[in-house]
Figure 1 (cartoon, rainbow, N blue to C red):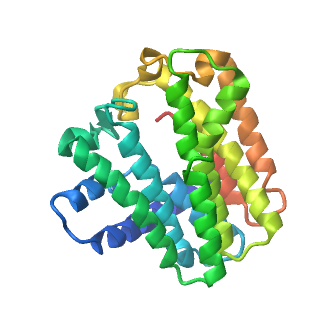
Figure 2: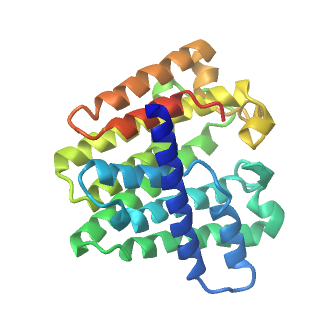
Length: 293
C-alpha cells in the first residue's frame, strides 16, 4: 500500500511539473517555429526526475514546493536543451527520443540548435521568477550555472565526445558521468534545499544523495542499453556499443554493473539519515534502481 501512495504522489508531482512547464512555454513569443520546436521537446513527457527532485528536496527540507516550481522548471529546461543538442548529427546523431523523432529530424538542425539555446537561456529567466529572497535566487543561479556549464554537464559531454573510440579508466569514466549526468541531478536536489532555506549541512546531504542517485541512474542506463528493446526505452538500444562509447557495462561487465547500482543506491539512502521526512526520496532511489526503461 505504501508503494502505491508514493507512486501516486510521484504522478501528482509530475502533473504539477507539466502544468508549470506549459505555463512557462506559454509566456514565450512565437518567432518562426522556434517556440513550437522548444515545446515539442520540453513537453515530450519523460520521468521528470530532476524537477521532482527539486520539489521533494524542498519539501523534505521544510519548504513549500510551490515556491520551488520556477527552479524545477529551470532544471528541466536545461535537461531538455541538452537532449536536443546531444541528438544532433554532430554529437550523438540520434533519430529517436522518447519514442518520437528527435528535434532536428522534425524542425531541421538550425532550429533544433536554436530551440536548445532558447531553453538554456529561458531557464535562467525562470530562476529569477521564484517568489523567494534575492539571495536565494542568486544562490540558485550560481548552483545551476555551475552544474550545467563547463565545470559540469557541458564538460562531461566534451569528455564523452573525446573518449569515443578509446578506452577510459574507471576513474575517467566516473568523472565523465559525474559531470555529464550527475551534476544536473545533484543541482536539482540542492535547488530544492535552497528554495526551502536549508542549512549548509542539509545542502551537502541532499547533494550527496543526488550524486549517488545520478551515478546509479547512469549505470542503470548503461545496463538497459544492452538488455532492453527500442520499444521499451523509446530510443535505439545498442547505440553506445556501435559508437564505441565508454560505459560501465563495457568496463565492468553486466553483473558488476548491477551490483554497483545497488551499492550507489544504498549510499544515496544513507545520505538522508538526518532527515525525518525522507521516505519518498528513499522510495524514489530504490524505484529508479529497479527501472526497466
